[in-house]
Amino acid sequence: MRTVDVIQKKRDGQELTSEEISFLIEGYTAGTIPDYQMSAWAMAVFFQGMTARETAELTLAMARSGDQIDLSAIPGIKVDKHSTGGVGDTTTLVLAPLVAAAGVPVAKMSGRGLGHTGGTIDKLEAIPGFSVELTEDQFTKQVTGQGVAVIGQTGNLTPADKKLYGLRDVTATVNSIPLIASSIMSKKIAAGADAIVLDVKTGNGAFMKTLEDSIKLAQAMVDIGTEVGRECVAVITDMDQPLGVAVGNGLEVQLAVETLQGKGPKDLEEVCLTLGSYMLVLGRKAATVEEARTKLQELIANGSGLAKFKEFVAAQGGDSSVLDDPSRIVQVKEIIPVHAEQDGYVASITAEEIGVAAMMLGAGRETKESQIDLAVGLRLHKKSGDAVRKGDKLADMYVNRTEEEAVAPVRRKVIEAFRIVSEPVTPEPLIYAIVTKDGVQKQI
Image 1 (cartoon, rainbow, N blue to C red):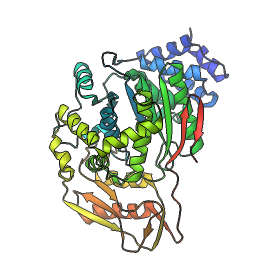
Image 2 (cartoon, rainbow, N blue to C red):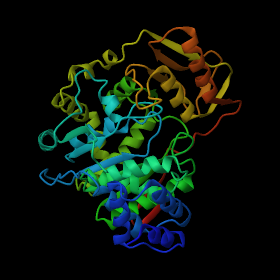
Image 3 (cartoon, helix red, strand yellow):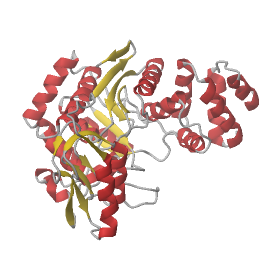
Image 4 (spheres, one colour):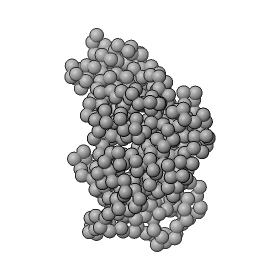
């Protein structure tokens, strides 16, 4: 088999065989297929696309390229949740313990963040003592015993995807739905999940800016799951403004605790209840989404979700006592308010700009080598649709660099992220659609 023939076949819009796809991925991972040929193939895919079968075969080939986690020793249906990323995306911190409290084992591998704020791993490390370094045996035993564990991704999980993504990033082929979908799903499948719930963000703070593209990506990922024998549900959620009111690592732990106490912001609670309900249905712990939602609400109300969070933190070496007073996690030199400069109504909050503002404070990484300050970030006091008077607090900046030259640009970015208009506005929907193997159910 010759690489050039496979490139030409895809260039001409033909469907590749399983053997041809495996040949490409194995050869590229091993270094026998050079970057320039793989770049040509990626560009051919960018223009010609891939069928659902091809995309599934690509996903499996990348999953096979490195370590694969075997969760079969853990009783029950293991349901994973993946978010395509956003600003203030605190859902895993709430969902992992809450869903585990409902009896669905949560065995999750998460990453660190590069960009706006830290990833789930960074957020959990804001809890003193919390360790994300467990052996596979420790990981399996903890999920069996406590029902939940979250660890960092292994160094050799889907190496083909890491290599291919780096190439796509410099060859203008990132925005290909088959390549995005297979990249995400290869990691989920290698991590051993039986079923997967996908939180696909849409809007200015999301990777997919339009609802149409978000639905296409969701359909592609659900199709992959169906092709490889995994049950999948995708929920399309809004990211035209930050989710919840906290952007920053320790601040988001604090917000997760509030949400598990039933005191969190309604948008974060609603997204968590929706995603969690589908996790319970796929995990066979509820017959319907409505029954699952009721069960999750009860677990919040009776404190079981928060108790499971404490148990989970303690099991991974963290100081669970800080969850009784999560303000201890967010110790900063100063909390600086950002005030509105006009009367009106919040029409929108540019999520991406709020994320960048948090990164400027030190809550995210500009490069892989950047050090995150786990305590700093932003807490919003106004959301879309809210009335505002000049001088009202739009947000608080939690800062450790208090000099004006560090604070002033962040303050200006936050103010400019809020679009304030003179007439009342109706906020955008929070959940746009549910995508399953049976099709797309629009929520609006």
